[in-house]
Amino acid sequence: MNLKTLFSAAFLMITSLASAFTIHYYNKDSKSYKMEVRSQGSTQSVEFNSSTTGDTSIQTSANEVEIKTSCGWVKVKNSAKIVIKDGCITVE
Image 1 (tube, rainbow, N blue to C red):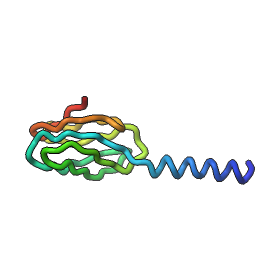
Image 2: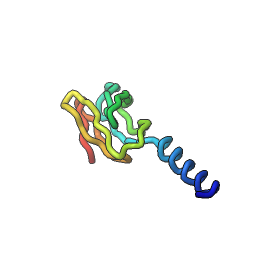
Image 3: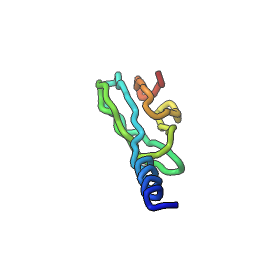
């Protein structure tokens, strides 16, 4: 394997690891939420601002995460559009 190929492979690997998982959301509630996110065996938290439409990012290389809501765990895919109502998430 030549040096150019090795650098190309390393660059692709680093780029995929650094990519963010994005969720587009509309929070219909007048309350902000901080929810637990489970991805590839690790957990982190994500915050959704009240009464707004926005995007939030999660640092993971996974294509799907699980978000814990007051209605239970919800599976969400990368670039999904979700709606938050009464603390529950629905995927559009």
